[in-house]
Length: 57
Image (cartoon, rainbow, N blue to C red):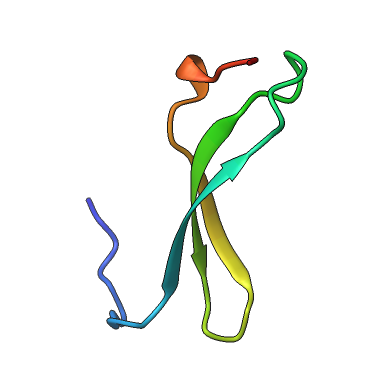
């Protein structure tokens, strides 16, 4: 049984597509991530787009 939702809102956030890593080592691969930020500058959520396809180059 699902828990009833007390409140739902549509809010504005800032969505960034970023590239991280230098690709110079296996431990620091180049990756694309999606970040969601509040309008106050707080990082809300970060998602690694394709961790299995990360390139060490």
